[in-house]
Length: 230
Image 1 (cartoon, rainbow, N blue to C red):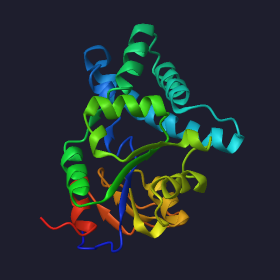
Image 2: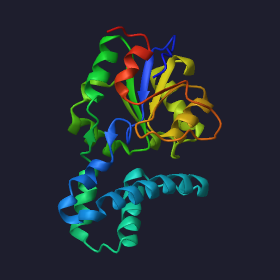
Image 3: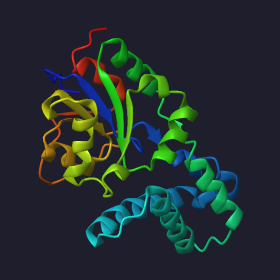
């Protein structure tokens, strides 16, 4: 972090997959079966999962994130010539109980203790989000768990980010949106939210409308950015 601070923030809204929850953890638990193919499968699965959300949005052919996630896994397994229905079912089940990144509970606890509203805003279906939130034990640290299913289109469509404004009853500039997905950070900024990009993996900056107000490498930096002192 470069010392930036965001002022006037009253609520912090987090993306889910890749930001709070490690989408790689599902495949990691199947290394016993996948071996050297594990990392490649995880990468293709995630890439196709995102691509299919964008393509379905452009086509006007929405399906919920569980369907998209399954379709993306099918593509990934087919591309690697993995034919194992039991493994597919295992991976899909594990996607409902992903691991939270280590700093997540303490970060949310600090924000709640500091008087900030906290929420998730995700592509995930309500059922998927409920499962992973309960499984990681963070439900009591969230004021709301918000899904794109409320508007029937995926990020980065502006109507998705408006869900946070409406649900928290806050002005856009009073919301700090946090995402580890650069394209998501740009989408939220273009809508008008204040944005922190958690660049966990040292990625290059995207060339898109909008821009993150602050870039960090871990969510542990969020409380100080919004004015909470240690």
